[in-house]
Length: 159
Image (cartoon, rainbow, N blue to C red; front, side, top):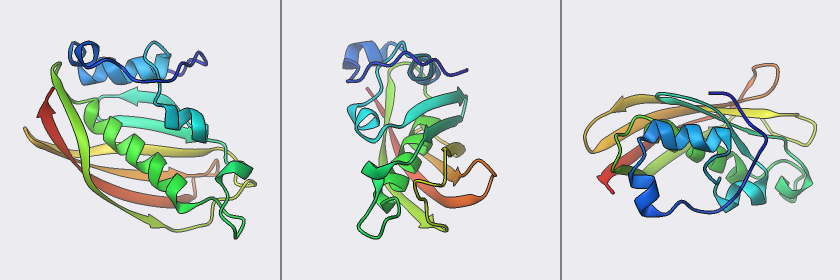
């Protein structure tokens, strides 16, 4: 599914969320028919691509993302990875199910700065069982250089 610039922010009511398959929910985030979370507005990231088991989140780093050393705070990279990996797992769920992160690990390989340009965080499902899903994520720059990567374990539950 391709990206649409129309954006709203907020939450989706539980009854509305549980009536959608995970793929339909994530496709709605990409298309702008479902609201992105308010943290996406605060940090300025977007959910730009989705297919079953894969989700892409993008961000243009700017001054609001910087730590005192002048590089993008590691928590921003963690948020991008947590978002793309969790949504990748979500995209595999049947209607009436949800997921939440149980744990995740990241490795920060290169500094991200305001000069890095658009960064792309791509999450891909590694395995999805009845109760647990695992995924990996990679943050790259426009030249395809790996900036950070991570893994997650998500709990799958009936909504």
